[in-house]
Length: 415
Image 1 (tube, one colour):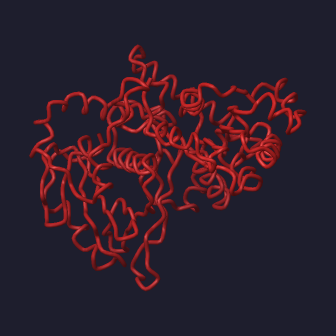
Image 2 (cartoon, rainbow, N blue to C red):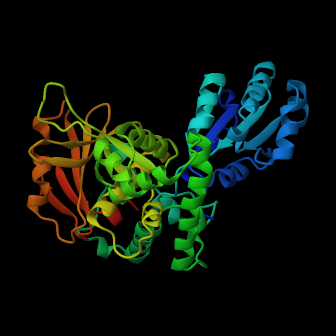
Image 3 (tube, helix red, strand yellow):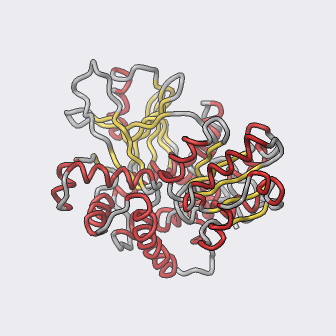
C-alpha cells in the first residue's frame, strides 16, 4: 500500500466540529474507499452501489441514522443523491454524528452537495498518486515532500548537489519517475507483481469502464461513438491548444458538442484545462485554453500506445504532476499557460498572492541558455513579479541559467 498526503489532512480534521461531513470525490479507482476506511476504521461502511441496500437506506429516518449509523462512510453516494438530504437532516438535528461521503462522478455528487450541504461539509479531491506517494511503502510511512513542495513552503530553493546522479537515492527516484511516465499514478498499478502488460490491460479496462459507467452517468449519452472520437482526439492533442471547431470537425460533432464533451472529461478528473493568462490591455496574447491529461497512463491507454513518450506527452505528465503536488498539500494558486501571437510561450504559470512561478518543460537531455528565452521576457508581460522560473527536463545537471532561472531534472524536482 502507498501512503497519501491526504491522510494527514483527514486525521487532523477528525475531531473538528467543522468537519462532521467530509466529501471525498475523484476519478474512479484513485483510492477513495481505501483512504477513507484506513483513516476512519471505526466508521461503519455502507456501499450505496448495492441496489437492494440502497432502497433500505432511503427509508431510514434521521433518528435511525443517529441510532445505527452515527459514524459512517457512504460509498458511491452519487448513485442515490436523495441520501445527501438524509445526511443533511441528521447533521442539522444531532451534534455528534460524522459522515464521510465518497463519489466518483464529480458533477452528479457535487451539484447535490453544494445545494444541500453548503456550509456543512469539507470537500477534498482524491487524485492519482503523486511521485512522493509512489515512493512510500506503507500507510505508516508519511510521504516526504518533493523538492518542489519544499520550495513552495518557503519560496527558497533547498541546497542541492550539482548533478542529480550524485544523490545516493538517484536510482530509486529515477525508477519511480520512469514508472510514472509510462503507467501513471493509479494505486492499483503499483503492485510489483504486475507486469507491464498487466498494467496496460488494466488501463485499457479502466478507459472502457469510464466510458460505460461514468460518462453514461454524467452525460446520459445514448451513443458513445461521438464521445469516443473526441476522447481519442484529445489524447492525441494533449499539451496543445484546444480549437473546439477543429476538434468537432475531426470527431464529426458540432463545436458546442465538442466543448461539452471536454467539460465532461474535466469534471470527471480525466483532463486539466489550463486557461490562458492574458491581460485585456495586451492584445498580442493568445486567449485559447490548453488541454493536459491528468494521468499519462490513461492518456496512453486511450491511444493504446506503448513505448517512448512524445514531447507533448512528457509536458502533460509534468504539468499533471505539478498540479497534483500543489493540490495535495493544500497550496492555493491558479494555473495558467501563456502564449503570444508571435510564438513565445510559457508552459505553466502558477499564480500566488505575491507573484508567479513560471515553468518551461523540455524533454531534452541537455539544457542551455537558449531554452530560457521565453522566460526572460515574462516580466514585461505579467502583472505581478516573477518569484522564480524553472526549466524542467531530462538533463541531470542543475544549472543556474540566469539570476532568477534555474534548470532542474524533472525527476529530481518532483520526487
